[in-house]
Length: 152
Image 1: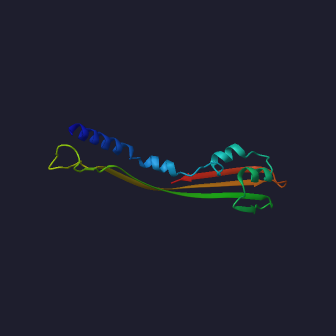
Image 2: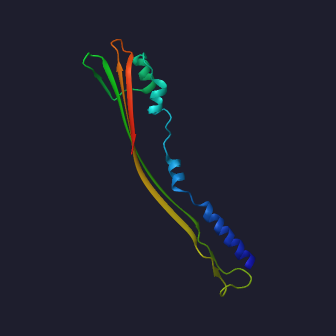
Image 3: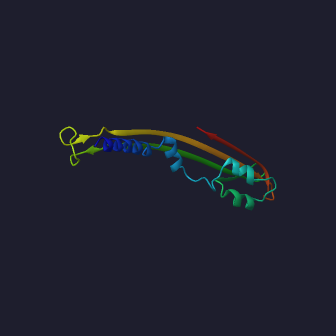
């Protein structure tokens, strides 16, 4: 009986450890795939002086704003804002009750294992912004570009 009780307590402890994940692990699990999204790195890799407006549109997609400067040359503005909310909660463990049915008796025919329960939670909110400005020549080729990103 003591041996069985010892094994049950070991199993309860092992299950407690397996059932818990950290908030960081939960956040990583729900994070969106960033492949194909507009980023400062993508602008640095893809945009070059002299590119045509068609090549820019293929690389970055459609701009949010198309305007003209004082000389009637096109200016494209990409303005992106991302808000990320992450909430993580985990609980794990074992609450077991051993009842009668074993040979011998523990506390009058049945015994209780202590609860091995653990819970944790965390939440966070963050925002990222990216603004890209691309200026074109009269013949629709990139003459200048700039970007600014922030995270808070």
